[in-house]
Length: 125
Length: 139
Image (cartoon, rainbow over all chains, first blue to last red; front, top):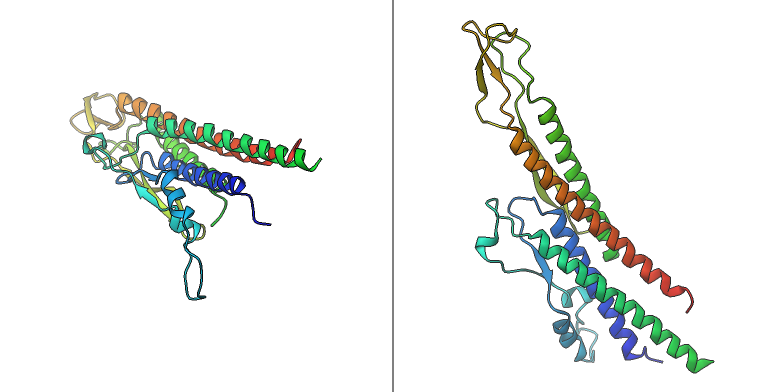
């Protein structure tokens, strides 16, 4: 039986969120590194668009995009006036806001997963 | 690719390490803000500076942070006329360290802030992991 769509979606979402958490951690750790540029992920909706219509592998030579191709970290464009003199574009405040967003969304995602499991179980009982 | 949440913990750990070394350098500067030379007319304690560098950990592909260099501040020393001081030169001038308390304290506040931010990231990554693990409970 194929994995139900909602479960796959929830896993993708939590994967995207935890990858974003890693990027935030990198930005915060490098908040005082000269020349460091802040990075962020492409919005989840674009990941979703890319994965919804995956092409069928009709030939073993076809390459399917891996999770990493779909989650490319991109450098955030910043206003040059936002940069410090050392060329660092990390704003700690922004990173903390993003951290809060990830926390909230991840909590929602895990709670949704729990509810979906409960629904599956109530069908079985 | 390793687990992203575990990677975040590792990166935040590297950040904490870098910031605490920065605090150590600051405390050395503050502690030695009045340290004169041991020989008459010699150079006193020179303020230390710290530079961070972004480091790609090849084993895990992570964007860590590392202390790139600890250097010496090139600013000129303060000079005071104090002929009685054992470190005074022939004309009675003593060189004092080029440490500015105000700069050090401001730097300390910033290091403190960055340390807290890293700590926050570490806490949250651990929290998200335990949320996932708790899916196994009462399912």
